[in-house]
Structure formats: C-alpha cells, structure tokens
Length: 579
Image (cartoon, rainbow, N blue to C red):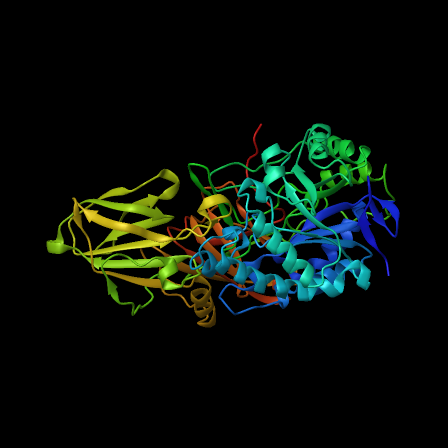
C-alpha cells in the first residue's frame, strides 16, 4: 500500500517528496448526483487532492439520529474522489465554521452541553461519540489501506477561539484510537498567538490566508522549523451576506498569490475550488457588532461556480498549476445557458396560520426550548384592555413581523438593533419570528433564537404567550400535495405555486427579483431563502431535482409578491460587486 508521511521539508508519498495541490468541495453543499462531475473538474484543473469538512449538524440534526446516507454519504464522496485518482483531506471538526449554520455544531449540543470546544467532560463525551462515527467511515479509506485519505485535521482554527490543550489532546487520542494513522494537522491564521494556542507539538501546523504568501509562510516556519509548509485554506474568494455586495477577487492577483505559494514549494488547499449552495436553512451568520445573515449561494467566486461551471479563475489557476505539476490536456466544457422562460404564479392562500396547540407561558418560548429546527415561530397573545403603546422586546433573534388584530404594524430586525415598536390599540398581538441563520463562529455559537427575555407594553410586562412552530418544508410539501389550487390572494404572508415543463432535467436559475422574502421549493426540494435585500437575486436549481415533463414550484412568501410570476433565467445573478 502507498504511504504518506511528513519529511523534513516536504510531504513524502512512498518516501518521495510530494506537493499537495488540493481544492475544497463540501459534499453537503452539492447535490450527490453532481459530486462526480465536480471532482472530475478538480482533476482537470490540475488538482491532486480534494478537501472537505464534515458537518456534524448535517449528520445528526437531532441527538441520536445519525445519518450517513444520501447527501451525508461521506464514504461515497471519498470513494468518488479515489475513483478519479485523487487524494483526500478530511476535516471533521467537530467545529468547522465554513459559514455553515452554528459552525457545524448541532443545536441540540450547543443548547444542552456546557463548555463547547473545550475539555469539559460532557462536551468531550459527545464529541468522542461523533468522531468515532466519522472515523468508522474515514479509517478504512486511508491511503495506507488503499484509499484516498492522506491527512486528517484536528479541530479548526482553534487558536482564534481557545487555548485548551487538554481538549486538543483528547481529540488526538480519540482520533488515533479510532485507527487514524495518517498525519494529523491543525490550521490557524498565521498570527503568533493563534499558531501557539491552536496546536500541539505532535500535530503538523498549517496556515489559512489569501495573500502575502511569502510573509505568511515565514511566520508559519518560525513556529514549525521542520516539515512541509502548507496553506490549508488559500482564500481565493469570499462569502456574501444579505444587504451587502457580491464579493469577488481579482483573478490575476489570486493567480499570482497561488504561484507564489507553489514556487516556494508549499502545499496548498484552495478554499474554495467549488463552493456550492447553502440549500434549505443551512446558511450561517456573522456578528462582529452587527448581525449579518449569509446568503443562500456559496459561490465564493471560486474557480468552479455555484452550478459547477469553470470560470476565468479556473483557467488562470490551471495555468499556474501547470508550471509545477502535470495538468490533463482535457478541459471542461464551457458553460451553456440554462433554459429561460416565465410562468405565472397562482396564489395558494395564507400559510403562516398553521393551527397550534402550544401551552401558554409567561415569557415566549425560544426555538430551542421548543426543539424547533425550522425557520419560523409564531407568537400570539391577548393585550390587556385592547391598549396600544410602545412595545419593547429584550432581544429579537432575528427578524420579527408584528401585527395587531391581523393588521401589519411593522418589523423588528436584529440587523438594525431594533428592540421597540409602537403598536395601535387592539386585542390580539401576533409576532412572527424568523431564525435567519446561526452565527458560525466564536462565543455566539448556540445562542437561542426567537423572542428573548421580557416583553413590555408601555413598561408593563406582556405575558400569556402561545408559541406555534412553523416547519416551512412541511408546509410547502402540504401545499404541493394539495395541488396548489387557486385560493385567492391574501393580505400578508401567502403561498404561491407554479408548474413548468422541461424537455429534460437541467440546471436552472429562478430570478426572485419580483418577490420579497421567503423560501422556494422545486419538486419538493428546498432551494433555500430569497430576499429582495440582495445581493443575491437568483436561486440555483440543481438538474437532478428537475425532470422531463411537469415540474412544480412552491414559493412561501413572507411579505408581498410584487408580480405573480416565476422567471427562469439563463445564468446566475449574484449581485453587484465592489468597484
């Protein structure tokens, strides 16, 4: 069997110097039927390795309900990498960041177990059980067992979070006890404190950066006098958030930075080679003083775009890689325009008036207390004596629509730091709250969602709340099964349906510019969130979820459809970029 090890200056493959030229593909952000295509295109760019995170909360969204099939079939993904003749790097966390909701940690974990990302016994017990399941998949697929896996990472950028050496040592022990024999790595930004706090002497340090490669490699070398230099996250783009711009990087500058890395003899993992999509409700959020939920697309301005087409950056990187490693003669086919057409939307009636049987509580129950993993909770109460006034909430997480006696009053948005709204006289107060995405890093991991704390009206406590959970995927499925029959347009949140026909399955882009805010589904597949706030305007529809003949679209609109139509366009529109 082939061996893979650390030499004094290089990785060694069967004892010979080997430069790892890798690219990131997150299997959980790509339709499984398209994994093979993305992996093949990585080889055609000249990559010899594929890297992926493992998202714990994708595999075990509810405690004890482990799933490694379908979208979560890590084993099949690694087998496809191997079949393409490529190596693999696995980064199981348990924390991954990745702009993925809650940084990959399950909500049930961060909401019930003290001491996340530490040596706290309860947390370690859960992490150990998780890692053993992952390593049951990874261990038999290591390179010295005839498989593709050459490196396994311990934690993820831990030096930016903590300095608990006992925690890292426990992860190493669990990893080795599970039969992982390949070299173990850590990754941190090339900052002295992070490199010192985020690793152990027996672990190989790598860096994460996107520019000034020579300087960053020198910092890494100061902390690790021997062994191969590696940038384990070479940032070739960036992510987007609602209300911002679409981030891109200069192609020539990115290619020059990659050239500088490879010329120095360093190994590299391009983050991302192919970003994919935050389908469903999987987007994370940033909060550095202002909460910013991330968009549905994870295009990342990567060499392979959101739907798997090569970009200008693909060919620029391919040209650079060819100076240091063999590159296949074959190149991917150029992108073809997707089918463009328009169909009318039919109003299918209100959808947030789902009946609820929740008990009345003094304070509103959070999403976490309710065990709710979907996007919305509706809170209802009766106002004393029908009085209006200034309604104040301790904290709103993350966006709330307020109505009195069925009439919309306004919104409270966490992004605006809203806590108060003036309401008119009335009897029934309703607040519909959306979880817009869990913060994916630092101390806000696992924070509760919903209406948090006390609510007052002109200073007096408002009590007697009923919380009704709304599972948007279940609601969409019920509407689809009902045939989406015409029910007339309603005031406030309304569902819409459409039917369209295709000659054959195809990647599609649905333009959401004439809608406001909500969720979209094609043939029962949850495409994700849309929002007129931008920058993203199109939602990607993977070809495998479409079919020849009749296809069904369900739109759950939270505010207002400006024009009752569904417009499919030939190419993605991810928003304006910075000049």
